[in-house]
Length: 313
Image (cartoon, rainbow, N blue to C red):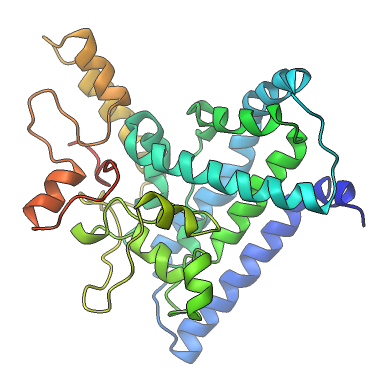
């Protein structure tokens, strides 16, 4: 199989089979072999339902991203061939693209409104990996893919690398795997590193945005190691405590609408309620991640902090 045939293959079908096979293995490990982790039926069912429905819903708006990438393709500086080497370089650069996208998803409330769906579970298992937002093509973060196309990568290969990256990340959402060998933990994102990202403990906020390679967090000062003495507490700083699918999907958008429509705000304040980090408020009545960490006596990260994983009331 050539590289071109590989990236044009039916990765969606293969990914689905891969996801549900691993999900069944994890469930068996937890229930029959007493492996670490929990998979409560209601929470897992919501995650699976959200994930199964997200594919066709997101597919209906995928033309936005694919259309933009196709529009910029005629303006490429180079035209790179599709082969194993360009595929590897494209994957690494796309992984950096994912880090940027993911960090923005926690810093910009408009993007967070989509991404908060993924963080809304108070559990941590492979079913949580499927809990994805339905509005990803409306966030604007697809623009991070434009430079990859402009420097010469095929748009389909760029898109494929993103899907492959997401497939790798699926495996990170588990408590059944503890620490991996040190060299793996040093280079790659692992279940241990990603458990930190899903935690709401003050020390773990603003950390570990990596997709496949944890090196980006190490380079940009957002890496935090999992501490056995401070086990991750999963979910949001302010949890939703509901299994209502539509509330999980829409609550942050509703919150944005309510905040923007308040009387007496300036245009700039209304803008900030949409695009500033989650936790921003015009009167300082809400807590940002920096506030939460400071109150816990934890210093700010070495790089600009991102928003707290919380939804405004």
